[in-house]
Length: 443
Picture 1 (tube, rainbow, N blue to C red):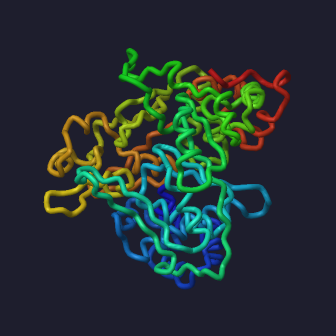
Picture 2: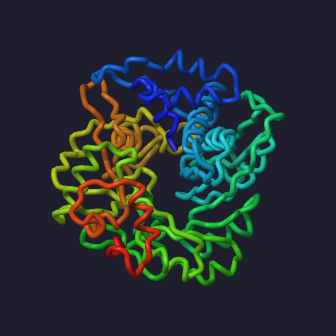
Picture 3: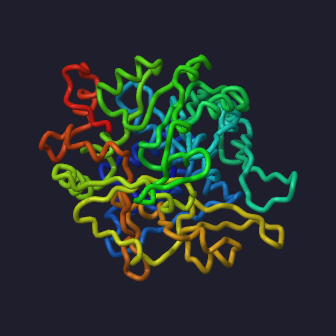
């Protein structure tokens, strides 16, 4: 998600190492890479105090070039991830961010992506999209629009023929793994999706990023966090009865948790937090250093914020010693727009609004002011996390907002005094015998 913005900002930063351009040379649609380089590539890198050039914000219908940029960005990311080895590579997209998703999938499939993992919504129509794109046929899915009349439906469509897709080039249909947090959702997707579902990622509420809200009437603890209970737990034995493989996520980052997952019928685990703070991750070195130093002295916290995300889903926010990020000082601006919701205007056309945009703008578009309380601009913040903070016209550099799973609060058990580590060391740790491994990082 948002790889198109990450991609063009890497180009504007000078494409250090030439990796973007090396992958772009392999993109099969002629002329697209050259056009993108001409518009966005800055060989010497843009000046620090100069804003990044923005991509046009997504709408229901965009130009062929805008679609091709999204395809190219996802192609590049997957191509580079697959370079130099034969192991499978997956792509994780948010179902909620509908408008770029079909183009993102098509570009990733051109690069041979092996798995597609999607949560933050119910991706029931994605299997059919993958089936169509694998044959270079038009792919369509319902577009969630607020305020539609009863029986009215809007769609998002991508016809490969309009963006240079070549039917003579074979592309495989990747395995599809929806993220689920309830047995009922797994059953729905397995039986009612419009194509093949190949397995599941079972994500608990201690995982980083967006979480599914608790089932039933919401209740909150003294920190304002939603309270989860037994109703929010997936019965793995019942899930196994569907006959599909599944991976377990959320506080699973230890050999002990891997063994427990396998003992309960899983084929593996999904680990985020340990890799997120490894040397190779995209977070800036300064942010990783500050967080891990804080963890070593017991001064790191993960808050399940019920209001931060404009999606309305709970969102994990990292708090650490020396974090100077004060959301109240940020001037609201919505210039990336990935998390906007579509709505039907009084004149019958579609409009777009985000609860994190300027409050007056949101209200003028028919949104309720109460929905804006506590919202953060995740689009800009997550770009800042990886060193691509936008320098706004008022002189403000967009502040970061780190997310992580609850395991971060126990990462010092893994660190054992270190303030940095590599992804390879994480793999060695996870694959070591449980009885001989370091203490679990799980809660």
